[in-house]
Image (cartoon, rainbow, N blue to C red; front, side, top):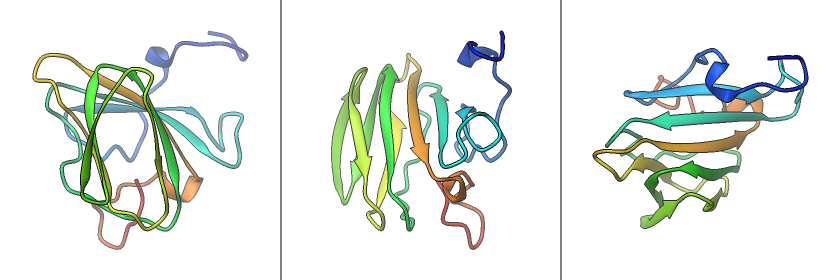
Length: 127
């Protein structure tokens, strides 16, 4: 790995991963080339994910990189697969989870720095 190119799989596990049976790696963010946003890569093991909707004060964006999952937004579920993008407006209840019991579900997600925290912690509204 150099200062210009690297593999996501070689990045360290990021702090603040709130989903059991998954990994979270920060690809770009305030400490790595992008001061305004955080690009995270989540790798969810079979059946893992966030099954309870949550909300927060900022929007975020997601692109499926591998596998199949479910994107639940505002009470409606959408099946998602490689190449699918999702937009989450601020204040709208949402969650993502792996729809497979055999394969991993990997997606990239962009949030502002204040959104890169665990939403299950008391007082937190992160994602």
